[in-house]
Image (cartoon, rainbow, N blue to C red; front, side, top):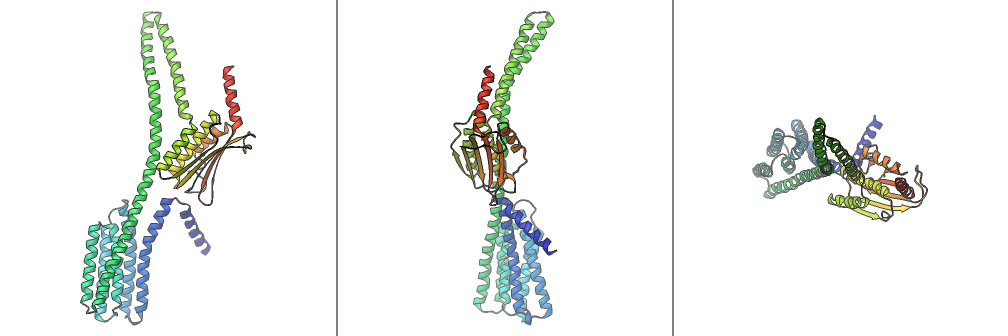
Length: 436
């Protein structure tokens, strides 16, 4: 049982460690706020332990119940208030009222116990701790104005209650001052933490929207190009076909000329459509490198480009590597929480593992930090994703390979290696066959 618990705890820690930056930030912030509730319980329990020797049994049971109820309510309101502040749940009105009521009741009960001689004046310090933690969860569940009003009323009532105990004036001032300063400090911490979580959520949503807009823009461009190329020609084909039908019905020999023209326009449309599709499927390497740097830097990712060999590569090879850059950049934006990305392109000597080339090899390496899971492609897409599978097929046709490796430090490396001579030779052979 102990081993299973340890493995479960270690697995939970490992999942947190391997999660993306926004997820880790959410977990860290939430558990920090939850820790404040545990801190309150610890302070009150420490004070109770120091007092328990001379406290009647009924008073001790009441104190234990009060400490437990207030700490649990603090934790529950912190969770519910944070969800409300982030827009994922309704306002916890009942829980807020219960928490404020418990705080006021606890303060009043402690002061009444001091006045009755059940507790010593040190209970006033314990009541100030209750007031210090009051503003934090309340500021997540209510507006700033409402929270300040509620906290001020409770603290003012507590100060008047302490003043009625006939304690030294400095003790009353210390009680009110510590309650005000503590409430302001914890209230600011809770509210600022909720605001930071909201900003992180908005940034993550903006990143996803940016990726979707890029895909939608590319689809619109492709649709617009096809419409511009085929729309006019198809209209002409339809009109000339109708004209040819009418002429054929009349027995006019001009129908043959019209159908010949339809055939010519149809072939011209096929040629233009191939050019559009070819332009869509072939990526310019230099353009993709410049575009990747611009898009990544716009997303707040430091992108460095080291291009020392693209100019001497054959056009088919440049197109294939351009697609690697495009797919890798998309995956970094969509799946990784990266702060930096490096793209290096060079021509090295040596063969390609698993390939057929043995001469110079074009090597394109993309590295980014913030990979979210083992085996993630460029920071997130699974290694078996359709994008990388298509790239592997494209590079395999040129005798190349594509590998993705995630390091222990969360750095993902996507490497494409293609024989440079093989690509150039195949390109030349293709032209030669066309000339023959």
